[in-house]
Image (tube, rainbow, N blue to C red; front, side, top):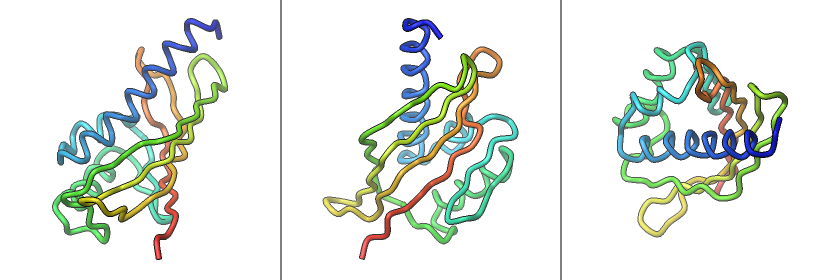
Length: 135
């Protein structure tokens, strides 16, 4: 992949990562789901949600407080992010995150992602949320 194409792809992937978190913090589930491939997978605590309807149901439960994870009123902060390209249409990513409520960190961890270029845009094919446990 040419350097200019790589830089453009990295920029689009970083934007995709930020859309997921920004939309989630505002409760915009459709925007969050929209970053996934049609058959995408979201893996949280060892449970996989496959396909947009399953991802939507899980994230909707998080947003309204009915899921086991309660992130209402919190804000996600992304830190170090690394993207490695497997080809012009496939990439792997690792991004550290902090979740805060007020001035307190309530979660932290890493997104381990697989991206693909589909239909002219980058999408998440698989996201594994790996938590570091806070005592």
